[in-house]
Image: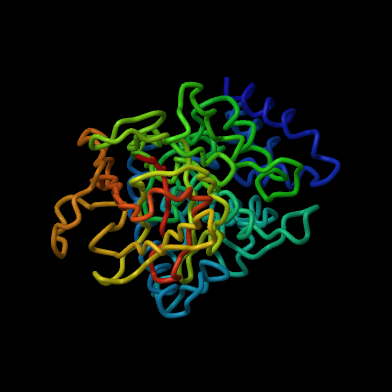
Length: 417
Ligand SMILES: [Zn+2]
């Protein structure tokens, strides 16, 4: 079964082999060469390169947790990610053995393991390290302008903060440390954990599409079509979506995708919205390459009120203006509607058990308790109702602008009344 799966991906991506070569394909497929994957799965003699022992996996999980803490500290001080995990030693990780998986270390295969994998860019740390560092700056073979890091950032546009930053391939299932610090298991191809419909699989396995070198953009291909009965009062944001709803999901420890978000034509707190994707803006030093502003959200109607369903990634001091909706009327006049942190929105993840400053505003959507995931996080979306003081004039369009604070704002849906 697994053999068939790997082979199928090989075939799927073979159309681009001429451009990116087998090595590029290797990077797409969880940074492993497919031939290695199939050989290791099917040839018992080679299974020494990984363990299925849960005890080793647990030990490795703790180690990955330490590595994540060290990366966060490094990032805070350097305002950038490390080039290699070994950059963390000795200031952030005092023992270089932390960069060696406990299974690889204890089974005595460290040198052999390292020699086998070092040819792959993510394993090419100049010091001894058995973990795959997905955000290294090595170029992807055949795509010289694309580094492992920029490819990973493009993948984060599609799946959000669940994309792995460090992986340990010395286990089956494979262990992944996500960019946001969560840990989850996956197959060799972690991308499959984010597949909801067959089209997602096609997009997530295509490097050229992901890095924007293909004719079509990847995000629209992962957005569900608008329901035919959706009226023009539910603004159609299809042309502006630049992120998928996967940014609002999370994975459990086994790597199952928890759909914490509402989707489709949905009633949220008494107002119906067309929820299918996100218009995500950037913030200061935001790790995902989103735009500072998005123009041309067409309205072309009169209305008495506008309901915005939105949210924010990361937090700021209450009272901080994080974004604005700029309403453009047909007569050329404009009206700026500010989005204020602590009054209109708060960060999208509420970590249960953590005390927060104040309760306001009240979220319009909180994910159900059974979807809290291993980190006990609930998703929060907020609704802002804006009264239009010029209901007699047609509104032409809305522009969504980030104020480049520590918060990256996102818009989910807009409904007119
Ligand atoms: Zn490990």
